[in-house]
Picture 1 (cartoon, one colour):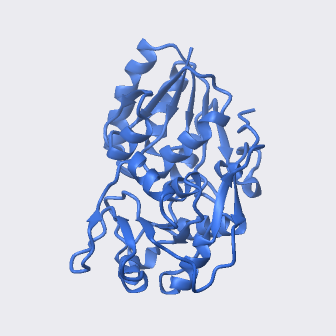
Picture 2 (cartoon, rainbow, N blue to C red; picture 1 turned 45 degrees about the vertical axis):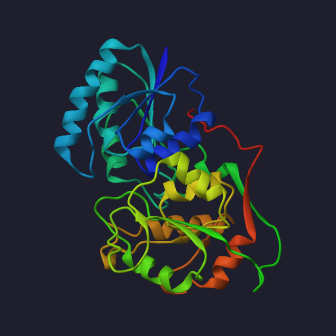
Length: 315
């Protein structure tokens, strides 16, 4: 029997890929996501069913993908569905429950203080087991199963000072097609020393006139390799970008997007940045606080896998 792993692209899929080895669902897995450079790279070699693009709060896309998902449950022997969201979970899980398939919804780690809209809606469907990655808001409706960040710990290598060398930097602003983060790019152009090699992955950010060689999207494998070969990763405080840096062994500098500057829909990036800072897994800063001293401090810290990370409980 096959476990169906469902997630939108970006941080949702990155979380599920990271959590998959800790999930008690067996080795026979079918992935369900939307085709992008990132998802094709992350899921290379896996069984994948590609779905239609699923923008945030696009109810037509939710309905279209629900119709498309019906064939999966008709043609495949699906034993369980696990999802980290967002709109694809709304499409697939009600269809799965109509076929009697157990469903497990793992709310995104970005939701530090409570569930997303998708989570609130899915909680109303009988038979969908709801999980939070934050023990602070677990209750009778939401069980705490663990966190995607449990598998990492920060390690200081040496004292950061004016001699700490930075040769390569990766800047990752995610792949959102709706929100840019030009404020951060403008700051980094001022702060990063001349001669430093920079990979700029800027999504939909307008970088005209800034004199940088930016790429909207970079395949996951290439981005991961560049992070592993860098001294510093600077990223928006998105879960996907943060996890990519942690997996590469880097201690990222996370700068949250701010809704008041039309950089995101809410302040959840501020929450995730605070969480990772508390766990000792990232340096966090507002745009104006990014300095060369902060970059040197991040370069003097590494992240390593925690060997004894517990399985994510679906009980």
